[in-house]
Image 1 (cartoon, rainbow, N blue to C red):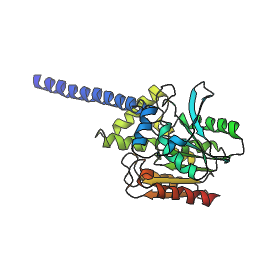
Image 2 (image 1 turned 90 degrees about the vertical axis):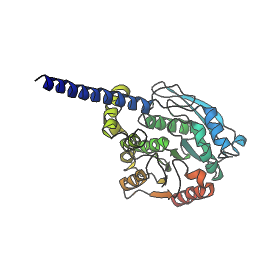
Image 3 (image 1 turned 45 degrees about the horizontal axis):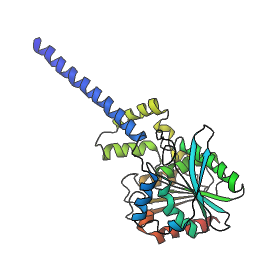
Image 4 (image 1 turned 135 degrees about the vertical axis):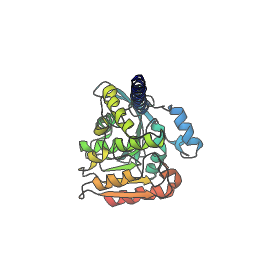
Length: 305
């Protein structure tokens, strides 16, 4: 009988240890997701400049702006004009990065006679630090920035948006607002937040996906949004705005399967182009071949002209 109680105590201790460790791991995952390391603008600029990805950006005049959003949050952004062109593109950076990460795309668009607008996502760059919501709040911020841009440059401008990674998913989520954009380009965005969290939980932490599910509960508790509320493929599916999807087949951060899911989800009456770049890792399609990337953009923009 004494051995029986000892065995129960041991088993109970193991169960309690498992539950406590699962709780702590899940809380850590939630904190890790919404409070990443964030690059400074200088460090982000130096990284891309030293890689040779933004040669010529020093000749571009970047005008700084700060705009207050409806909730009082101040958004830092800049713009560069390209002669008297009426074409504008808003460029949206990725997770933990800054607006400087989008200059490499901006240089391509300037070759196509676009004026470029870049900005720091909520909680990034020059903006006030706050938890990251993986596109949940950022889509509304982008919706407001679009209105600010039209107010400043004219309601009849030819306006498109392009995002990279989390910025790409933010662009897709913004499409639910039907802002009469002329086009959207998403580069290596995720179809659903849950997909990428499951993938990284297994790849980085070597943990089963139920830890990600538990982390989702704490994200909801601490940060007031759920994984199920970040489903870019659902937000863009009924939009009539032409969409170009670019994704590298060697992407180990957001699996290329996301690109196919987004394409498949789209309304069949809406123009959707898909480019899978062989050998490109996460957010590396442009740096792999600048000329090929420019051709993707030019072909797409000519098609919708």
